[in-house]
Image (cartoon, rainbow, N blue to C red; front, side, top):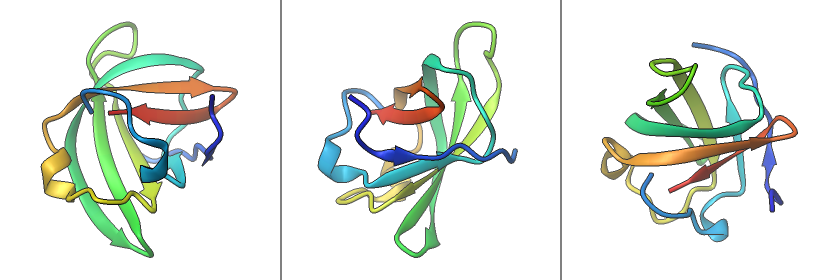
Amino acid sequence: MLDREFHPDFGGLTGAAKHDQMEAMEFTSPIADGLYDVIIIWADEVGDGALSIDLVITTGDKKGELLTLRAYHLTQRDPIDLAGHPCSVRVLNGEPEILL
């Protein structure tokens, strides 16, 4: 299912994202494999066609943990429109996928 390249690296939405919206993503901090309920608290363009998306985990042992996701080639998305959206993040073999 995870056919997108997604590389975690550490640093401090509702429905499933369409596969054509994402080419690659990476976290700015590592996260264990699993499914996480999150809320997008902010998103901003950071250049090179990338968005920096700040998420907070809302359930489970990691509740309250802040994650930053860098998404590349996310099409037809205004960063401001993403703020406040609940979604899920699935991580499999260290490769995350955001489920909007």
